[in-house]
Length: 236
Image (cartoon, rainbow, N blue to C red):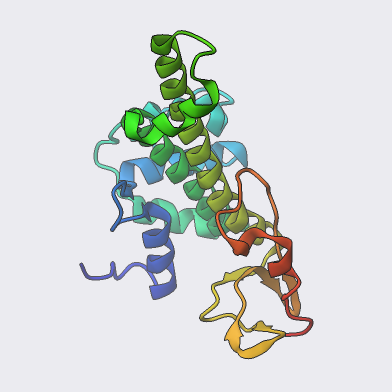
């Protein structure tokens, strides 16, 4: 697909990143132009720039993003051309691209979690049966099997929520600070004990590196533990 000539390369890339998530995964998310336009309408409503909202989109009076069901955003907007709307917002709304990027990240994660809730399978007996060693004989076997099944399912759902939240809050905080997140491969921060290895950094602003911590799940490896943080570089 060729780039729309009305957009610069940077603008085209920002829209592409804003509308897609996990394209090669089991739960890919893609926001159509109608959905991007409705998200933009919420932004314009919030910053009191209602005059820029397309006449084909009716936003409930004083509605904020969380006031509206996800189904409202997926409703098709007939004849919408998102590019002119996007360009108008860039010209008339201060720091619109940051607001747009962050709201799209929230919305994509919520769309994904909605699909997780619909598709998360119940655990198999093979997965939960070892746990019976601790509780067998306390209650009836049928009740124990049901209790362990649903307990594991709720844990799995909560763990998925924790994962999605963890992935979400870091880029938003980086945007709030006006910084850029870096993976280990491209990071300008090197490890103190090995200068040949980069250090994943949640946010870099000028010469200051930030590491965000939100404990919403158990660390699956050493990457979330204190010993890993002690290897944080002292200088850029």
